[in-house]
Image 1 (cartoon, rainbow, N blue to C red):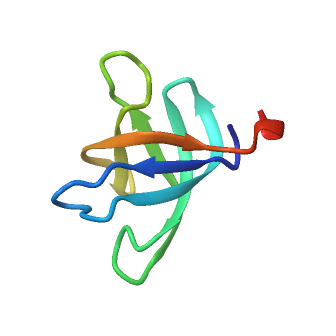
Image 2 (cartoon, one colour):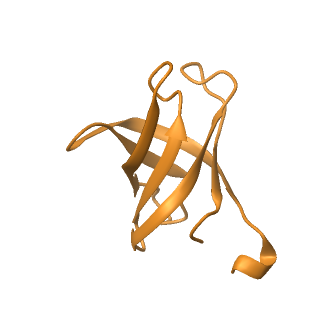
Length: 86
């Protein structure tokens, strides 16, 4: 859902997890997100995220870390949104 919050799972690389806001829905398996501190002390807008989960359920994603380059896979706990936004 546009405007929902994507909640990344805690990992060794992200010990506290991470959150990002869905800024655009490109397709069933691609969205754009806005978030801060993916890169230290930076705000990143319109970064591509691709669902790479085996079940197409957004439980594992790759995030555009450099323009045009997807990084490693990250687990996702899910999305948070207002029921009225659905």
